Image: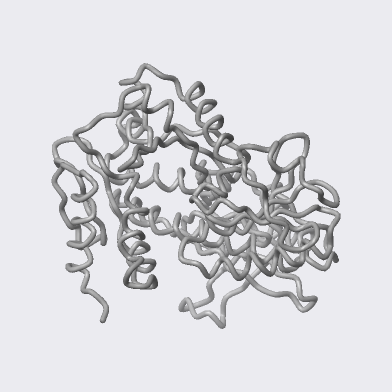
Length: 406
C-alpha cells in the first residue's frame, strides 16, 4: 500500500534527522517539498516528487538507501569537517548544466532578485562542455556534503584548487579495469554513483581498444557505456543498452559525447548511420526532460512576479521520411518563452480563436533567428529559451516559410 504524502514526508524527515540534520524541517504541502532551516536564515528546499517515485519503485529493503542517497547533499550537522578531512574526501560530481540553471531560477523564486543572496546558495562548478558541469562534494564515514561558497570561504580554499584535488581522489578510486561487455564496447565497473562523473578524467578512455575516438554515454550515474565512433555495431549496442538503462529510477543523460583532443563534444553519427535514429531520439529525450523541468520552475517564477508570459512546450514529431524533429508554436498576440527547436510554427488565430480558422506558417529556427532579430531574445537559461514579443509581418512569414521548410 502506498504511503500518504504526510507519511512519506515524515519518513523523509526521519532520514534527515538520522543523518545528523539539526535544523527545523517543515513540510510545504503546496509545492510537495520539505523546507529545512530557520525561515529567518538560509534554508534548503528538498523536493519530494521524484524521490517518492524512486522510493515507491524500490524493494522495501532498499527504500532507506534511496532516501539516504537522495538527501545526502541537503544535510547540515553540527560537526564541521576540517580542511585535512576535506582534502582526503573531496570528489567531483557531474550534473547536466540545465540542473544548475533550474536551481538558480528556483533560488530566484525563493530569494527574489537579490543576486548576491542567490550566489551564496549556488554551487560553484566547472563546465565540461555545453551540457555538463562538475561541482564538489566531500565524503566522510557517515555523510556526504556538497561544497558551496560558504564552505570554501570557511576553509580558505579556492574552487579550482579543490577541484584538482577532487579529480586526483577520483583518479585514485578509478583503477579497476573496465569490463568489455562485447568486442569494442566497455561498461564501467565501479557502481559507486560516480561512474558518470569519470567523464572528468579523459585519460581513462584513451587507452581503451576502440574503433575510432571514444564515445561516452551515461544513462545513469552508475552506468557508463563506451565504444568507438567508427564502430557501427558497438554504437547500435550502446544505443539499445542506454534505452534500457533509462528505465532505471536514477536516469542521468542519454546524450552521446565524443572525445576530441581531450575535450568531450556532444555527438551524433552521420545521418543514415544505423545508430543515428536511436541515438538522436535518446538525446532528444534528455533535452525534452530538461525543458520540462525548466518549464515548471519558470512558470512558478513568472506567476509569483505577476507576469503573464507563456512558457511554450517543446513538441516532437516524426516526418514522413521517418526523421524525428522538434517544434514549438509562436502565437500572434502572446508574449512567450520558446524552447530552441528545429521548427517554429507561427500561428495567427482566426475569428473567435477557433483552431480550424487559424493560419499557420512554419520555418526552421535558424531562419527565424536570422530574419526576426530583436523579436527573439535569449534569456540565458540552459537549455536556452527565447523571449518573443510581437509577430512577424505577412511578407516575413511567407519568406521564412519558403526559406526554412522542414
